Image (cartoon, rainbow, N blue to C red):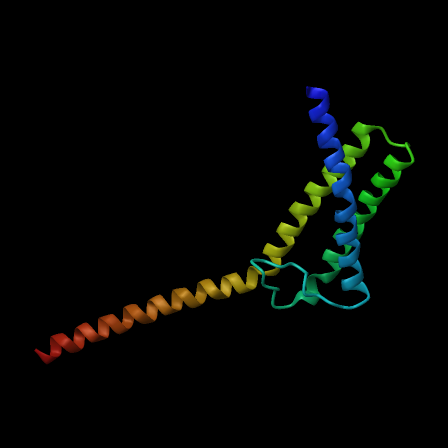
Length: 142
């Protein structure tokens, strides 16, 4: 039974490498050639204020990940890589790309997040001041 589960999961990983490589190379093409930064450092479906600043990092991540995955595909098809080798390559690449994209998107949105927090803090302070002034006016009117 264990053999079949291992075989199925290995095939799922191998077949998943094809669309991943395609998507990552398509993003490289969009960033490098088309100069389309709409998919750079997206957080909650929203681009950062200056995506061109973070485009080289996203380009490098996609290019490196796509190349490693493509080399794993070629190694499997050419029977040059053992199962443990190519699954390790693929797994590490997927996880590293996931973590790097997460960190890049959070870093790209850092200024906006801080500005939003400052605006909320200022709005709370303004509301508190307005409440104090209205209480003073009410106390003075009585």
